Length: 97
Image 1: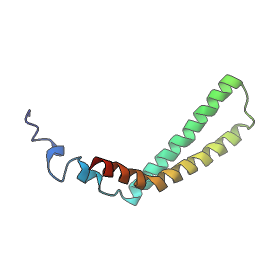
Image 2 (image 1 turned 90 degrees about the vertical axis):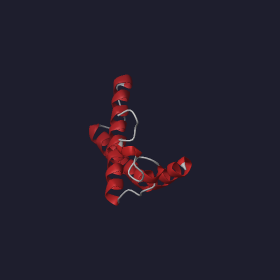
Image 3 (image 1 turned 30 degrees about the horizontal axis):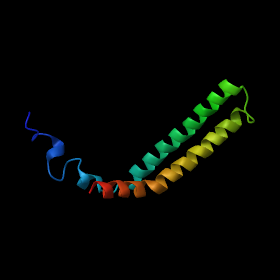
């Protein structure tokens, strides 16, 4: 237990080292990640809008406009995340080796 040899990450080829990081994620995994980043972007915008409503009291658009803007931001941030994820991953793997 104390020697560290029974850990899954210590086995060659099956751990969490740079070799495992170099594997390309599937398109489905990239799409799921991008969709989640899109949700985060949209919800972050709505939180920011709520803070402005609390602090300033009014916004130039109504609630329908806020939802439409949040949806547009979610689509944009998801698209950007999908387009750039492989580049960021490649830089991270390159830096570790």
